[in-house]
Length: 155
Image 1 (cartoon, rainbow, N blue to C red):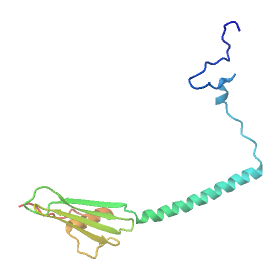
Image 2: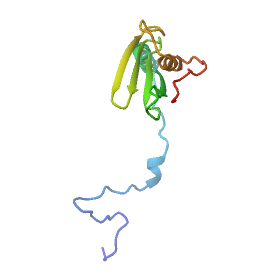
Image 3: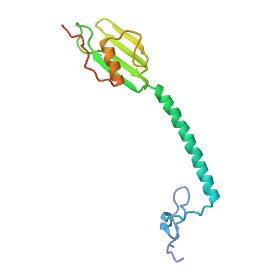
Image 4: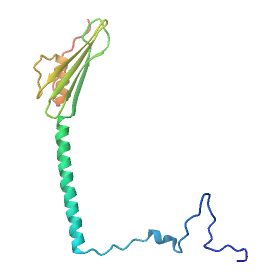
């Protein structure tokens, strides 16, 4: 070599050598011809896909069962229960699953106190008496459109 650099010479990088350059660099992007498949190989692939589909269907059904019990419906109402306090700092929130079962959580915020109540809900109703605000939150969670409750106003 007369000091000329050959086309295949590649300078060495730090820490090792670079891979050789292909004579046809675009060969990497060429579509590969699919291998011919025998009927037995195709049958095995179809059976494997059917097995995976069956397993996926089972998993989907399990997830559906689990989400029926998950909290998927929420309704919240803010209100002012005491005349001497300003702002709607109290709230009632209903947390229900698809079967309208869950609970209503209510917080009454006052000047000198804070009260929190939880009332269980089974299929859209509670064995405990619900306030207007709790009932409104429950109806919002269930998607029932009703006129807004008459909230206590400041005097």
